[in-house]
Image (tube, rainbow, N blue to C red):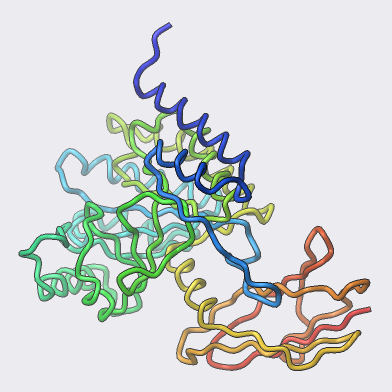
Length: 375
């Protein structure tokens, strides 16, 4: 029986991912890096060694983050109908499984397909709107000036009726450049060009949320493989960042491919999210969480055998209030009786080993006080 080149490559990826998932983050880093290199994925081990009390790497104490970025552009006439079909299918699936996504909008495409833009913005899944320039501009060309970049983004804002507040920029063709201009315009987040298994990294003055897998026509029947990328991120406490175009998940002007390929993935992600394994988020939410975690300190104010008090404060008082997950230790031989946040009772969750507990704390301009009572 003959196997196609695509089938063999997919089999090899499944085999490699199976080995990596079994090894997990405690396995040999050199071996993991070289195995990932065989499937053209970079690897930077997550080094999160802060002892409690500390902010967890991902919200709710999840083992990994899952995010999807979608490039809404029409660079060829043949992609116009597939783009519309794909957008509708993706929006419906996102609502079905409550998966929020980052949509990087090309202003020119938005002008041509306003109905599809309306579906995205009015979706109850709560999607993030990012920017993808107006004309799908190559940001790496020497002829691309800062003034042209500003003009393109300004036109995109005007088309989308946005004044400010957009944080995510997705480079057309993933060709990067003009980071200083983007930072001055208020952007904080981008998708890098290289596929990597890692935690978000500050690069060029913005947070780089590295992609892990691209979905296109070659992904037909690859639902198992895509779910394994989710498991890989969980095993290595990393980010599973999937990206595609609306038109790249439509074959022969039929959205069945989009539905049959993405449905099993989103169903799996929703299930793992409910288990607390993954935090489903937009690129902006992930980068904001990372920034706040970086700038927040937790100080022990009082400590006794039956009670502890902590102060949670940000070194940047002007940041928007953001909820983070803080993990605390449970005193040996004790159990948590109650937790108060700024003098009011608040919810907490105890880890399976009964050694730690987690609390959601809004961090912003004001100091927060967490008081814990044990029994």
